[in-house]
View (cartoon, one colour):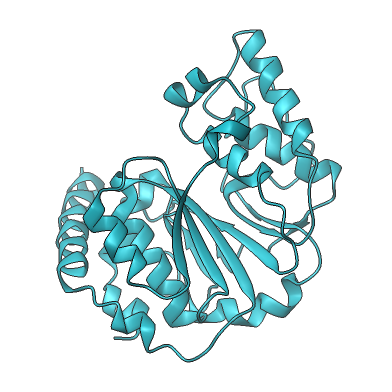
Length: 277
């Protein structure tokens, strides 16, 4: 009962903070950033994620630096105002996924829109710079800068908070760290054909599941020996979902993926503190 009451309070605070962020956002906050990074960032989102995506971009600029490019792949729902806001930010581009190159049946995306993340990752070909793939509900903090040089060679993933976010038939080995498909660091191509073969098999047998894409990418990461980011600094954790306070000191972590059950925590904490404004 107490937890539910706290949740109601924190969600109200989050809603108010989100509205204030959108009404006060100024692209000059990001234009004035001097530090630059040699990173290409890629995201996938739409109008429902507009505030989260804008906040994520702002947190990277303010706490890490300007990327070489940040390409936001549009799910087709961004309106003209939202596109204009993104275009006001230096180095940020909004693109459409090339449907001519799509491998999976289009009907699958109606059921599970996040499968488009697999399509856009398969279409990445330029690895002359490190590529970061980040979901729209990820915030970056100052400590992230300390890891950039460490992530310059291998492919990396963040660890999920639990072991149950996979296909029902998939069993995690004792020595495996569960992959969270919200954040990847890519320095070299991967065999995405393996992922598509896995997904097509699920489709053909009527067993495509909400977590099938994450399952396939996890298996790929194990096969290709992706490195694992330290979970205490690259956080996917929902233990503070029904608490007033946050489970982490944001001055001591590199990023946090605010997955669905804790999305309100992304906005509950003052955005001006996160952005140093």
